[in-house]
Image (tube, rainbow, N blue to C red; front, side, top):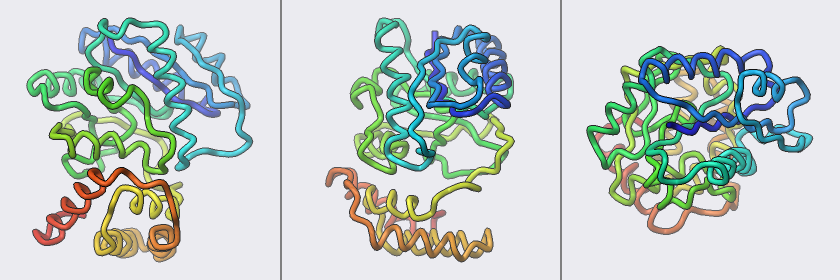
Length: 272
């Protein structure tokens, strides 16, 4: 069995496709899913759709604003993880999964991820690629992410809700402590929404300050945004968020690890 958390807010148009696609890829992998949909204050019938599709549902009150890119979005995910911990014995599953409510999958998606994780016990977080967009091998996407349960326990079984970069925290923590994270390029998932289209670039800059990013790396990331996407404003806002914010920082060990890794990438002309 694989427990799955699906955070959802006003997703009546996408949720059914996501759940049906998930179940198809689970059937292909000969796995059973325990799907928990966390309705984050929807004003549509997201919750009703989830119930009609025999999912477990956690209903949260409407915040009155979108928490996308904010630390409090971690609380939505944590509500799902808490439900799982309250209703399933921890030793009854080896992996858990988190999925965006607008994501669909190739039939072999889960099978490919599980194959990689079962071959390497040190691999604790992995996901496929979204809309065929290539990413760095260890920069695992949030949606479609499978996490090893034993590692999740060491992490505290929750996402830290004091950071803007709470989703990346899992990866940095894993890599800094000798575990492996990996993008499985053969595993494909899709979303009808353009990735990165609604990113708040000031918040992105805050995230980079939290995780110990060095300024040359931030600057190169901003230039990449400008040169590749013709988005000068986004690059400027990223730098502004980094320079003029005072967020809650990752602990010293994680920030030092991230800084050294970024410096090595720059010096080796690696991808940034």
